[in-house]
Image (cartoon, rainbow, N blue to C red; front, side, top):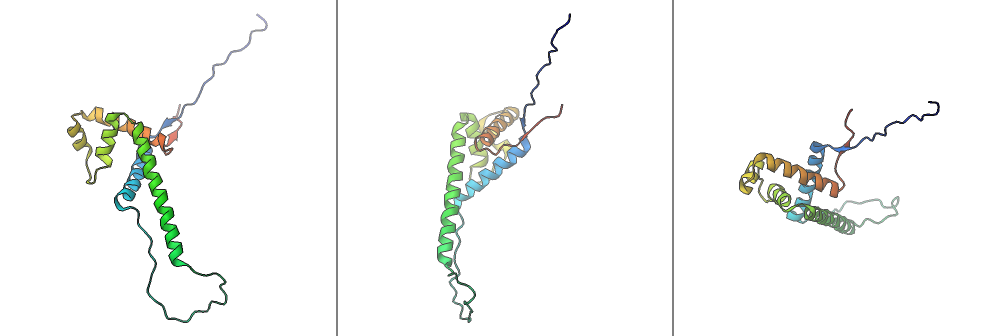
Length: 154
């Protein structure tokens, strides 16, 4: 029986999504994107109150441009928030129609809505609703690259 090779089974550790942490991140992302949609971002404003105090500018060679700085900051924030909203819209387009409807009713309404209101409105059982919502959140988290992964214990 001399040269028998020892065969070992390969095993892979598969990562799983941490549903609670992923849901928190997705909800935070949606809340931030909604804030931009509803308010068109909070804009910085410059103080226009004149200050007649004597200042010594000899040690500072730079020139302060508060209006320009505020405009640049506003443009950057606005562009970032718009991009975040567009990414959310793309992620929603990936969802199945029932999942998208759940997310839109639960998170994108102007007034806060509870889960039981959504599944009653859609005529779903609570269990079916929760499963579809979890799938939708998982899909959005993966699409936006904000899902939280972990290796389960053996």
